[in-house]
Image: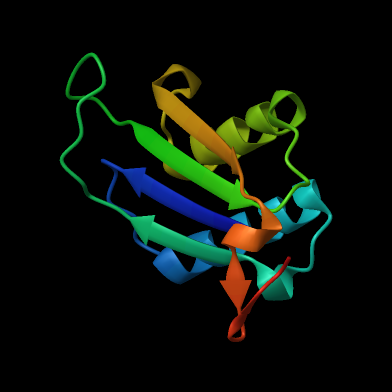
Amino acid sequence: MPYINLSTSVKVDDKKKLLEDISILISSLTNKSKRFVMAKLDDNCEMYFDDQGPCCFLEINSIGSLIPSVMAKPIADFVCEKLGIPIDKIYISFNDVPATMWAWNGRTFG
Protein backbone atom coordinates (compact mmCIF):
# COMPACT_ATOMS: atom_id res chain seq x y z
CA MET A 1 0.00 0.00 0.00
CA PRO A 2 -0.59 2.51 -1.52
CA TYR A 3 -1.90 0.98 -4.73
CA ILE A 4 -2.57 2.92 -7.91
CA ASN A 5 -4.46 1.51 -10.86
CA LEU A 6 -4.22 3.61 -14.02
CA SER A 7 -6.47 2.83 -16.98
CA THR A 8 -6.17 4.89 -20.13
CA SER A 9 -7.20 4.91 -23.76
CA VAL A 10 -3.68 6.08 -24.66
CA LYS A 11 -1.01 3.60 -25.78
CA VAL A 12 2.00 3.95 -23.48
CA ASP A 13 5.36 3.20 -25.09
CA ASP A 14 7.56 3.05 -21.97
CA LYS A 15 5.28 1.33 -19.47
CA LYS A 16 8.02 0.54 -16.94
CA LYS A 17 9.14 4.18 -16.80
CA LEU A 18 5.57 5.45 -16.36
CA LEU A 19 4.92 2.94 -13.55
CA GLU A 20 8.14 3.90 -11.79
CA ASP A 21 7.46 7.64 -12.15
CA ILE A 22 3.89 7.41 -10.85
CA SER A 23 5.07 5.24 -7.95
CA ILE A 24 7.56 7.93 -6.99
CA LEU A 25 4.84 10.59 -7.23
CA ILE A 26 2.37 8.64 -5.07
CA SER A 27 5.10 7.84 -2.57
CA SER A 28 5.93 11.53 -2.20
CA LEU A 29 2.28 12.60 -1.97
CA THR A 30 1.42 10.00 0.70
CA ASN A 31 4.75 10.22 2.54
CA LYS A 32 5.00 6.44 2.30
CA SER A 33 8.01 4.46 1.14
CA LYS A 34 8.23 3.78 -2.58
CA ARG A 35 9.05 0.23 -1.54
CA PHE A 36 5.39 -0.29 -0.61
CA VAL A 37 3.75 1.42 -3.59
CA MET A 38 2.19 -0.95 -6.12
CA ALA A 39 1.19 0.42 -9.51
CA LYS A 40 -0.77 -1.15 -12.33
CA LEU A 41 -1.23 0.16 -15.85
CA ASP A 42 -3.89 -0.79 -18.37
CA ASP A 43 -3.16 1.19 -21.50
CA ASN A 44 -4.72 1.29 -24.94
CA CYS A 45 -8.12 0.50 -23.37
CA GLU A 46 -11.41 1.05 -25.09
CA MET A 47 -12.76 4.00 -23.11
CA TYR A 48 -15.35 6.68 -23.67
CA PHE A 49 -15.58 10.00 -21.79
CA ASP A 50 -17.89 12.38 -23.68
CA ASP A 51 -16.15 11.45 -26.93
CA GLN A 52 -13.55 9.06 -28.34
CA GLY A 53 -10.60 11.30 -27.32
CA PRO A 54 -7.85 10.31 -24.90
CA CYS A 55 -8.97 9.82 -21.30
CA CYS A 56 -7.81 8.25 -18.06
CA PHE A 57 -9.21 6.79 -14.84
CA LEU A 58 -7.03 6.37 -11.76
CA GLU A 59 -7.90 4.49 -8.59
CA ILE A 60 -5.73 5.22 -5.59
CA ASN A 61 -6.07 3.03 -2.50
CA SER A 62 -4.17 3.59 0.71
CA ILE A 63 -4.38 3.11 4.44
CA GLY A 64 -4.68 6.75 5.42
CA SER A 65 -2.37 9.44 4.02
CA LEU A 66 -4.83 10.47 1.32
CA ILE A 67 -5.70 14.13 0.95
CA PRO A 68 -7.68 14.25 -2.31
CA SER A 69 -8.02 18.04 -2.35
CA VAL A 70 -4.21 18.36 -2.26
CA MET A 71 -3.31 15.34 -4.39
CA ALA A 72 -5.76 15.62 -7.29
CA LYS A 73 -3.97 18.47 -9.10
CA PRO A 74 -0.41 17.05 -9.08
CA ILE A 75 -1.68 13.63 -10.15
CA ALA A 76 -3.79 15.09 -12.97
CA ASP A 77 -0.88 17.31 -14.04
CA PHE A 78 1.39 14.25 -14.11
CA VAL A 79 -1.03 12.31 -16.34
CA CYS A 80 -1.53 15.33 -18.59
CA GLU A 81 2.22 15.87 -18.97
CA LYS A 82 3.25 12.21 -19.40
CA LEU A 83 0.34 10.97 -21.53
CA GLY A 84 -0.97 14.13 -23.20
CA ILE A 85 -4.46 13.64 -21.79
CA PRO A 86 -6.40 16.86 -21.18
CA ILE A 87 -6.95 17.47 -17.47
CA ASP A 88 -10.72 17.55 -17.99
CA LYS A 89 -10.59 13.96 -19.31
CA ILE A 90 -9.08 12.50 -16.12
CA TYR A 91 -11.06 10.98 -13.25
CA ILE A 92 -9.36 10.05 -9.97
CA SER A 93 -10.93 7.89 -7.28
CA PHE A 94 -9.39 8.02 -3.80
CA ASN A 95 -10.12 5.13 -1.43
CA ASP A 96 -9.02 5.20 2.20
CA VAL A 97 -8.91 1.53 3.19
CA PRO A 98 -9.11 0.44 6.86
CA ALA A 99 -5.91 -1.28 8.02
CA THR A 100 -7.97 -4.35 8.96
CA MET A 101 -9.00 -4.71 5.31
CA TRP A 102 -5.51 -4.62 3.77
CA ALA A 103 -3.00 -7.46 4.00
CA TRP A 104 0.65 -7.83 3.06
CA ASN A 105 3.18 -10.50 3.89
CA GLY A 106 0.46 -12.85 5.08
CA ARG A 107 -1.23 -10.56 7.62
CA THR A 108 -3.35 -7.45 7.81
CA PHE A 109 -1.95 -4.07 8.78
CA GLY A 110 -4.46 -3.68 11.61
